[in-house]
Image (cartoon, rainbow, N blue to C red; front, side):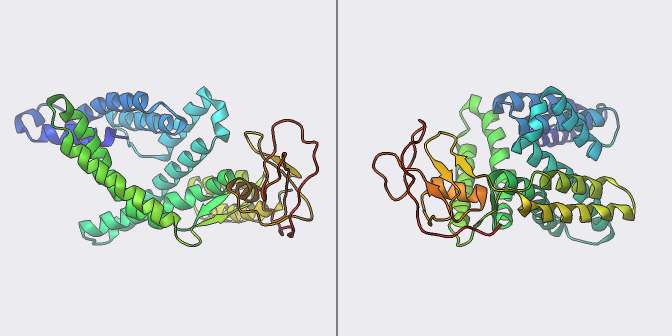
Length: 338
């Protein structure tokens, strides 16, 4: 969210005028202005679950600054999550809520540990920036990987590399230039910031296309056992929140959740969201390379699938939403091991 940029701009602007900086609290004034900027961005973005979580957490952080409290804590993330669940309980099962909360809590806990480690060492500023960029991608990627695999049935093997290559462009070019273009638009000087935004966006899109085109860039993962994700989440929270050596029990819970993952019973029948494709578990099926069938295979872990045909059965037929009464068309193959 652009409130961080606004906070620095207001505080830095006040510091440029010593007579003003000696008479006002620059940090609190910047926090007050940033609250309104964050609210404006929330309305502008459409207020989805992830943005609402970010807004509530930012609001808690800025209110902590106004009340002379520590801003970035696990408590602020807990308040944000509790507030969202109180307003929208159904968001607990949404991928956006789960992934955003997992990334946020893990980043706060990870950087609290890293701060103590970095303060003991004598590192140059550029080294600290490099470590921060790399570790934020590593921590966020590992924290969200189980939820992405459970909801989308895939794991991006080169996601860490893509994040490291694109995160600086988002933080250094796109977000600051977007705010600058917004401020310069009334006087007609927004062309240069928008051009820089466009070049940075092209870089991100190019990296995404390049990484997606690499061999083995995506690994299909079957849907997990219903207990796997809750146990992994419980283990992660235990590892972060519990004090002392007892927190290592969280590692055991995470391992147990991973062991539960492949124990789920595969459904005998799958119907696509639009009702145009039906997949039925069968002993005789084949490797059908249509995207719809590939999505079914990712969700089930099947290598064997029967695809229902309509009138003219192509190699990979689609079924109509109406009840299927025709003979199924099978392809030779074998059932995947769970």
